[in-house]
Image: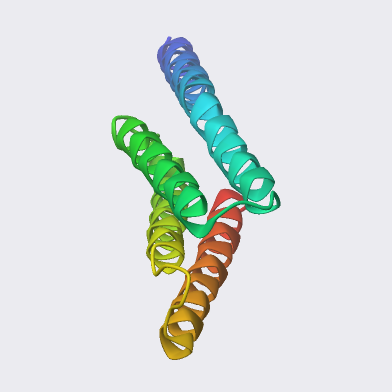
Length: 152
């Protein structure tokens, strides 16, 4: 009789574990569905910026494009901050957030760069260009850390 009780207890615990795994997988699916549009919008922002940067136009126009990209990134970040990741993906979520911050800041720098006018100080141009490049490198490093966290 004790064996039957023990078997029933084990079966009950196994059932609870499978429900917990199912709930965890459902939580990850919800998270992935919530962040997918934000990541897609981020790709669109970068694509739009690259497209605008490739068209010959005046620096003030390009400054407006960079400011627009910065604002769009801030909106994505606001949406990103409203999502709660499952425990397993918290580190991934945080690294992606850092990457987004670097991207937004790089667009701010580019806006400043193009706002310098037609006869800017070459040292200031170089400084801003280097700063934007550093930010984009830091973004890439944060994305790598996010990928590492995802595959732990």
